[in-house]
Image 1: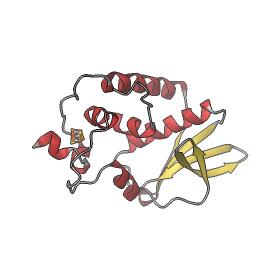
Image 2: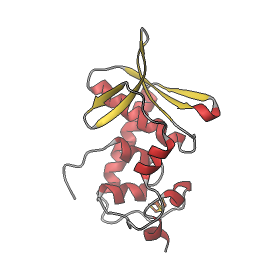
Image 3: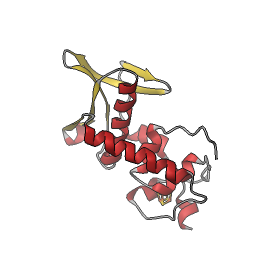
Image 4: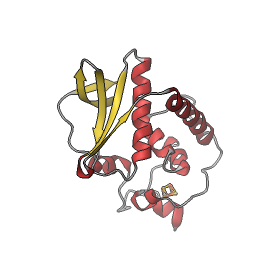
Length: 167
Ligand code: SF4
């Protein structure tokens, strides 16, 4: 196992969907490329509207700036559906925490225009504690000798590991 593993927003996203996938992704185990299912990158692209021009870069992460005014910086994403909203919220919270470490205070916003809804994500102590616990648990998972057993979740039908898990 690579000792230099870095937790990423993507791993946070997976963590709130499927722990087995966290292990497989962190170990860089490539799914069957012939698998017609879509995986996260393509899925997110399909679920996210094209980016507006205003972006902020944080390492390799690019975040949309939704608003920059007297109330401060708001970063966020526009989603086509709220199907995986809990994961999207925690991923955005992770980015807010990373910005905070870099000395930038920001709020997050998830927008669901089809549902005419938006949700503000603020980095509260409760959310920070939840993120810390998730990061610790992700590290526990990725250092397991083998992947956690598969558990059927809504994501399975989109997941490139489906054949590996379920055939
Ligand atoms: S197919 Fe389902 S159980 Fe297997 S890694 Fe993907 S989401 Fe997890």
